[in-house]
Length: 118
Image 1 (cartoon, rainbow, N blue to C red):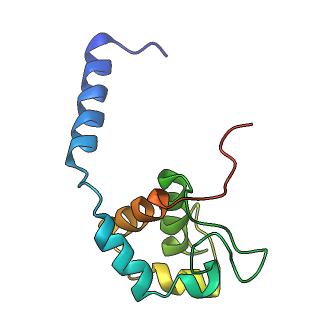
Image 2 (cartoon, rainbow, N blue to C red; image 1 turned 135 degrees about the horizontal axis):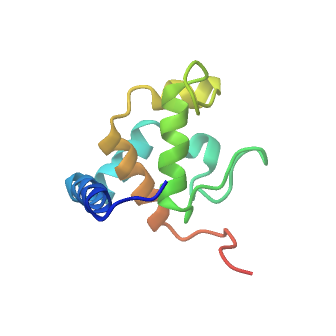
């Protein structure tokens, strides 16, 4: 289906408004939240050394991926694109969209050992 110029302009306007309405991330608030929820107890004090190899390294991870994962844990397994994990689901349930944005920005800002480019 070919999109008309008017429809394309309307779609771009909606996307722009959505992007502009998103609040900026607050790194200090993100840090406070990861401390409050004691994320380091599983993911390591530097978020690069998890206590179990099955747990992901979070430091330096892409913020959009972290947001996606936290939203999926918040949805749980009863919703489309949800994730289930007893610990993570319980941690993510009370988080607001802004909390998730702040946490993702904070973790992304940390130095990580993830390979981003080969």
